[in-house]
Length: 302
Image 1 (tube, rainbow, N blue to C red):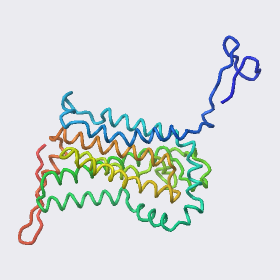
Image 2 (image 1 turned 180 degrees about the vertical axis):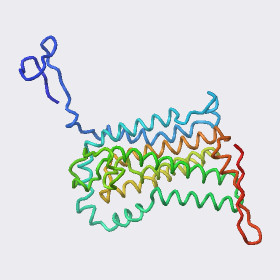
Image 3 (image 1 turned 30 degrees about the vertical axis):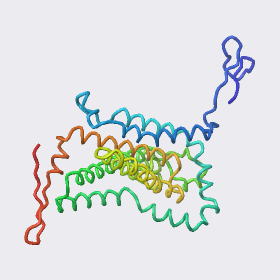
């Protein structure tokens, strides 16, 4: 911070001769307490979701695509990521130090965790849905598979558009020195300018959020087990990308918030409006086996 007073000829005089303290946003550094509070708010959001009943979205009539919970989480993600940007370079340099990079255990974890991305998760969702339909699995199984896959797609598509527009460079581009290097629109053309938000984090948290929300609809007790485990696992792909110098900490934070919001919103919307066209079309698919040949019959009722 610095003071602007009427005695300083190069600055605008303050009213009544008093000094006005002006903060310099570039020199702002979030305290550990601030960062911890933002992270806690994001982690606590699933608890709020679990406390809601399936009927809560129907009381007001037409279910909105984005509810107050999702809007709040996106707000926390945005505020948290903006705060973290001032510490991004320092965090990136720390992770690239020999202390971490020469650790074989960290290297192995990061290598395997990075394989969990939007492509592998989306493919797993499609396969699970297909197998469930072929095996005539209970509606619950196909619900979970379909809605989780939808969540992954929505989160990934949104992240793709946003990072394409912003064009934020990845840490390695500036040797971990400039977290404010943006090239608007360049993210659509070059992979190295697709940092914010992390699509790995978005897809992973969308998966965890959808699975937790679906589980909560059938068993609150089970959700308290699935939730913590799911979100803990979901955090590893984003952290692995930070370790690989492909994402800043703020990229992962925002991606996590985006994914969580997508997972909750998709699940809530589909269950509060079970007559929506996508559910009627895809959950009406009736794969069947006869004479060793797989036949797929679709039932579209729009």
